[in-house]
Image 1 (cartoon, rainbow, N blue to C red):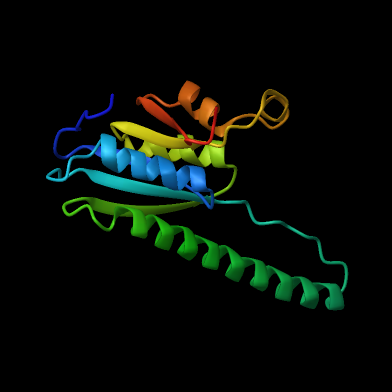
Image 2 (tube, rainbow, N blue to C red; image 1 turned 30 degrees about the vertical axis):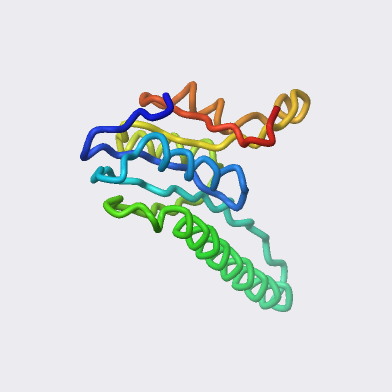
Length: 163
């Protein structure tokens, strides 16, 4: 697949998060799926965790929880901005790449699959965290779930440190 270029006007979704693995997947995508003279659309998809809901039992707890919720929302916004800035540093040198940003909220595997279903891209690119068998069995693998569920081809990019 190395050296393969995608025709002009193709849409590629790259799932990004805070991890080094997702930035490596983005870099790999730019190097291997998009040529420098391509006008492909690159959709950066970031999924925020679902907001925590806390019941409020009295006014003091309600006031405290409002402050906490505000702080958590600000943290989430700062995190989105940080991830997108890191991604921009990766794609900045590619001249004719049209970049769109999509921010979702919820369980990553569901949001990614639903977004891919709506956007109908030509390819979904995801990084692999390289979790071992036990952790993957307990927590599940987002990339495996998406590879089984979405209708477009899925490229799961291993980080060089994965064996």
